[in-house]
Length: 242
Image (tube, rainbow, N blue to C red; front, top):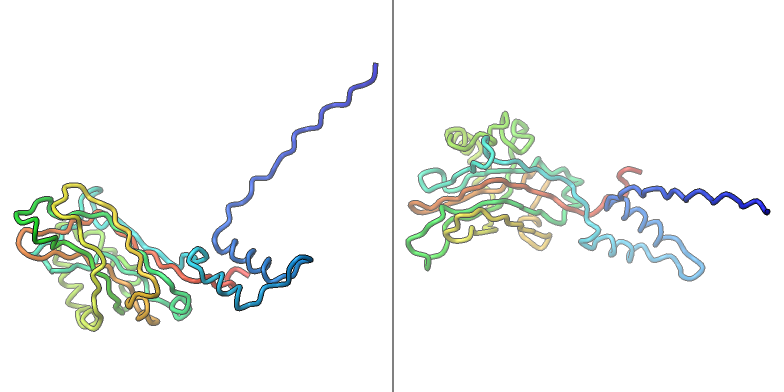
Protein backbone atom coordinates (compact mmCIF):
# COMPACT_ATOMS: atom_id res chain seq x y z
CA UNK A 1 0.00 0.00 0.00
CA UNK A 2 1.43 3.32 -1.04
CA UNK A 3 2.37 5.70 1.72
CA UNK A 4 -0.01 8.65 1.89
CA UNK A 5 1.78 11.97 2.25
CA UNK A 6 0.93 13.99 5.32
CA UNK A 7 -1.41 16.90 4.64
CA UNK A 8 0.30 20.23 4.31
CA UNK A 9 0.01 22.42 7.39
CA UNK A 10 -2.43 25.30 7.06
CA UNK A 11 -0.96 28.52 5.80
CA UNK A 12 -0.65 31.09 8.56
CA UNK A 13 -1.57 34.47 7.16
CA UNK A 14 -0.05 37.42 8.91
CA UNK A 15 -2.58 39.89 10.25
CA UNK A 16 -1.87 43.16 8.46
CA UNK A 17 -0.94 46.12 10.56
CA UNK A 18 -3.64 48.76 10.64
CA UNK A 19 -2.52 51.62 8.44
CA UNK A 20 -2.90 55.23 9.35
CA UNK A 21 -3.94 57.79 6.76
CA UNK A 22 -0.30 58.91 6.60
CA UNK A 23 0.84 55.33 5.84
CA UNK A 24 -1.73 55.20 3.05
CA UNK A 25 -0.61 58.56 1.68
CA UNK A 26 3.04 57.49 1.61
CA UNK A 27 2.17 54.29 -0.23
CA UNK A 28 0.00 56.23 -2.67
CA UNK A 29 2.79 58.72 -3.33
CA UNK A 30 5.34 55.99 -4.01
CA UNK A 31 2.94 54.05 -6.24
CA UNK A 32 1.79 56.97 -8.37
CA UNK A 33 5.27 58.45 -8.78
CA UNK A 34 6.66 55.19 -10.25
CA UNK A 35 6.18 54.19 -13.89
CA UNK A 36 4.87 50.71 -14.68
CA UNK A 37 4.81 48.69 -17.93
CA UNK A 38 1.22 49.82 -18.48
CA UNK A 39 1.37 53.49 -17.48
CA UNK A 40 3.82 56.33 -16.95
CA UNK A 41 4.42 57.98 -13.60
CA UNK A 42 1.86 60.63 -12.78
CA UNK A 43 3.02 64.26 -12.80
CA UNK A 44 3.81 65.70 -9.37
CA UNK A 45 1.09 68.33 -9.78
CA UNK A 46 -1.59 65.66 -10.25
CA UNK A 47 -0.34 63.64 -7.27
CA UNK A 48 -0.50 66.77 -5.13
CA UNK A 49 -4.10 67.37 -6.20
CA UNK A 50 -4.98 63.83 -5.13
CA UNK A 51 -3.32 64.30 -1.74
CA UNK A 52 -5.26 67.54 -1.23
CA UNK A 53 -8.57 65.67 -1.31
CA UNK A 54 -10.35 65.67 2.11
CA UNK A 55 -10.10 61.87 2.33
CA UNK A 56 -6.30 62.26 2.43
CA UNK A 57 -6.25 64.75 5.33
CA UNK A 58 -4.70 63.71 8.64
CA UNK A 59 -5.35 64.78 12.21
CA UNK A 60 -2.86 67.42 13.27
CA UNK A 61 -4.17 67.87 16.80
CA UNK A 62 -7.20 67.32 19.02
CA UNK A 63 -8.26 68.16 22.56
CA UNK A 64 -11.32 67.08 24.49
CA UNK A 65 -12.58 66.75 28.04
CA UNK A 66 -15.84 66.70 29.95
CA UNK A 67 -16.06 70.29 31.20
CA UNK A 68 -17.37 69.35 34.65
CA UNK A 69 -15.82 67.59 37.60
CA UNK A 70 -18.80 65.30 38.20
CA UNK A 71 -19.67 62.88 35.40
CA UNK A 72 -22.91 63.83 33.71
CA UNK A 73 -23.06 67.23 35.41
CA UNK A 74 -22.68 69.91 32.74
CA UNK A 75 -21.34 73.42 32.59
CA UNK A 76 -24.38 75.69 32.79
CA UNK A 77 -24.07 79.02 30.99
CA UNK A 78 -26.96 81.35 31.83
CA UNK A 79 -27.85 85.02 31.50
CA UNK A 80 -26.71 85.94 35.01
CA UNK A 81 -23.22 84.73 34.14
CA UNK A 82 -20.97 85.92 31.28
CA UNK A 83 -22.94 85.71 28.01
CA UNK A 84 -20.25 83.47 26.54
CA UNK A 85 -17.76 81.19 28.29
CA UNK A 86 -14.69 79.72 26.51
CA UNK A 87 -15.15 76.05 27.37
CA UNK A 88 -12.25 74.68 25.31
CA UNK A 89 -9.35 75.95 23.21
CA UNK A 90 -6.44 74.47 21.31
CA UNK A 91 -2.74 74.84 21.85
CA UNK A 92 -1.06 77.57 19.73
CA UNK A 93 -0.66 76.75 16.04
CA UNK A 94 2.89 76.38 14.78
CA UNK A 95 3.92 77.83 11.42
CA UNK A 96 3.99 74.31 9.96
CA UNK A 97 0.47 73.56 11.23
CA UNK A 98 -0.85 76.80 9.73
CA UNK A 99 0.56 75.81 6.34
CA UNK A 100 -1.05 72.35 6.53
CA UNK A 101 -4.39 73.41 8.09
CA UNK A 102 -7.52 72.52 6.11
CA UNK A 103 -10.35 71.97 8.61
CA UNK A 104 -11.40 72.51 12.24
CA UNK A 105 -14.05 70.16 13.64
CA UNK A 106 -16.07 70.96 16.79
CA UNK A 107 -17.92 68.14 18.53
CA UNK A 108 -20.02 68.81 21.63
CA UNK A 109 -22.98 67.39 23.54
CA UNK A 110 -25.41 69.93 24.93
CA UNK A 111 -28.97 71.15 25.42
CA UNK A 112 -30.82 74.24 26.59
CA UNK A 113 -32.88 74.64 29.79
CA UNK A 114 -35.55 72.25 28.51
CA UNK A 115 -38.54 74.57 28.40
CA UNK A 116 -39.68 77.81 26.76
CA UNK A 117 -42.69 80.10 27.08
CA UNK A 118 -42.41 81.37 23.51
CA UNK A 119 -41.32 78.65 21.06
CA UNK A 120 -41.86 80.91 18.06
CA UNK A 121 -38.97 83.19 19.05
CA UNK A 122 -36.26 80.61 18.42
CA UNK A 123 -33.39 79.46 20.62
CA UNK A 124 -31.10 81.71 22.66
CA UNK A 125 -28.65 78.99 23.61
CA UNK A 126 -25.79 78.56 21.16
CA UNK A 127 -22.07 78.09 20.42
CA UNK A 128 -19.46 80.33 18.85
CA UNK A 129 -15.86 79.91 17.67
CA UNK A 130 -13.05 82.43 17.59
CA UNK A 131 -9.28 82.83 17.46
CA UNK A 132 -7.11 84.22 20.24
CA UNK A 133 -3.51 84.30 21.41
CA UNK A 134 -2.82 83.50 25.07
CA UNK A 135 0.50 83.23 26.91
CA UNK A 136 2.07 79.87 27.66
CA UNK A 137 0.48 79.53 31.12
CA UNK A 138 -2.64 78.16 29.40
CA UNK A 139 -0.66 75.84 27.15
CA UNK A 140 -2.80 72.70 27.23
CA UNK A 141 -6.11 74.27 26.27
CA UNK A 142 -7.81 73.50 29.59
CA UNK A 143 -6.80 76.64 31.40
CA UNK A 144 -4.24 77.38 34.08
CA UNK A 145 -3.84 74.41 36.44
CA UNK A 146 -6.65 72.59 34.57
CA UNK A 147 -9.28 74.83 36.19
CA UNK A 148 -11.45 74.58 33.09
CA UNK A 149 -12.50 71.17 34.41
CA UNK A 150 -13.84 72.83 37.58
CA UNK A 151 -16.01 75.56 36.09
CA UNK A 152 -19.30 73.92 37.05
CA UNK A 153 -20.78 75.79 39.99
CA UNK A 154 -17.86 78.23 40.26
CA UNK A 155 -17.65 81.09 37.78
CA UNK A 156 -15.20 83.26 39.71
CA UNK A 157 -12.21 81.74 37.95
CA UNK A 158 -13.91 82.22 34.58
CA UNK A 159 -14.42 85.93 35.22
CA UNK A 160 -10.79 86.29 36.30
CA UNK A 161 -9.58 84.36 33.25
CA UNK A 162 -11.69 86.44 30.86
CA UNK A 163 -10.56 89.69 32.47
CA UNK A 164 -6.93 88.61 32.11
CA UNK A 165 -7.38 87.78 28.41
CA UNK A 166 -10.13 90.26 27.54
CA UNK A 167 -8.02 92.49 25.29
CA UNK A 168 -6.84 89.51 23.26
CA UNK A 169 -10.38 88.13 23.01
CA UNK A 170 -11.87 91.45 21.89
CA UNK A 171 -9.49 91.69 18.93
CA UNK A 172 -10.98 88.65 17.22
CA UNK A 173 -14.51 88.17 15.79
CA UNK A 174 -16.66 85.32 17.10
CA UNK A 175 -18.55 83.12 14.64
CA UNK A 176 -21.86 81.49 15.55
CA UNK A 177 -21.56 77.81 14.62
CA UNK A 178 -24.53 76.02 16.24
CA UNK A 179 -27.78 76.63 18.14
CA UNK A 180 -29.17 74.12 20.63
CA UNK A 181 -32.45 72.43 19.79
CA UNK A 182 -35.27 74.52 21.24
CA UNK A 183 -36.63 73.44 24.68
CA UNK A 184 -34.97 70.01 24.67
CA UNK A 185 -34.73 67.89 27.83
CA UNK A 186 -32.19 65.48 26.33
CA UNK A 187 -28.65 66.51 25.34
CA UNK A 188 -27.76 66.11 21.67
CA UNK A 189 -24.38 65.66 20.01
CA UNK A 190 -23.40 68.16 17.35
CA UNK A 191 -20.51 68.02 14.88
CA UNK A 192 -19.57 71.25 13.11
CA UNK A 193 -16.92 71.21 10.37
CA UNK A 194 -15.25 74.46 9.30
CA UNK A 195 -13.18 73.97 6.15
CA UNK A 196 -10.56 76.26 4.65
CA UNK A 197 -13.40 78.11 2.91
CA UNK A 198 -14.54 79.48 6.29
CA UNK A 199 -13.16 82.83 7.41
CA UNK A 200 -12.02 81.53 10.80
CA UNK A 201 -9.81 78.85 9.22
CA UNK A 202 -8.50 81.30 6.63
CA UNK A 203 -7.47 83.78 9.35
CA UNK A 204 -5.42 81.37 11.50
CA UNK A 205 -1.86 82.60 12.02
CA UNK A 206 1.13 81.25 13.90
CA UNK A 207 0.49 81.48 17.65
CA UNK A 208 -3.31 81.53 17.33
CA UNK A 209 -5.61 79.21 19.25
CA UNK A 210 -9.10 78.15 18.23
CA UNK A 211 -11.60 78.85 21.03
CA UNK A 212 -15.03 77.22 21.52
CA UNK A 213 -17.59 79.37 23.37
CA UNK A 214 -20.85 78.29 25.02
CA UNK A 215 -23.41 81.13 25.05
CA UNK A 216 -26.86 81.98 26.40
CA UNK A 217 -28.94 85.15 26.50
CA UNK A 218 -32.15 86.47 28.11
CA UNK A 219 -33.73 85.41 31.44
CA UNK A 220 -33.99 81.66 32.14
CA UNK A 221 -32.09 80.66 29.01
CA UNK A 222 -29.24 78.18 29.61
CA UNK A 223 -26.61 76.31 27.65
CA UNK A 224 -25.82 73.01 29.34
CA UNK A 225 -22.57 71.53 27.98
CA UNK A 226 -21.76 67.92 28.86
CA UNK A 227 -18.60 67.43 26.81
CA UNK A 228 -16.66 69.09 24.02
CA UNK A 229 -13.88 68.34 21.53
CA UNK A 230 -11.87 70.27 18.95
CA UNK A 231 -10.07 68.40 16.16
CA UNK A 232 -7.69 70.05 13.68
CA UNK A 233 -7.23 68.37 10.28
CA UNK A 234 -4.74 69.22 7.58
CA UNK A 235 -2.74 68.06 4.60
CA UNK A 236 -0.23 65.32 5.23
CA UNK A 237 3.37 66.43 5.59
CA UNK A 238 4.94 63.52 3.72
CA UNK A 239 8.39 64.24 5.18
CA UNK A 240 7.18 63.32 8.69
CA UNK A 241 8.29 59.92 9.90
CA UNK A 242 10.79 59.48 7.06
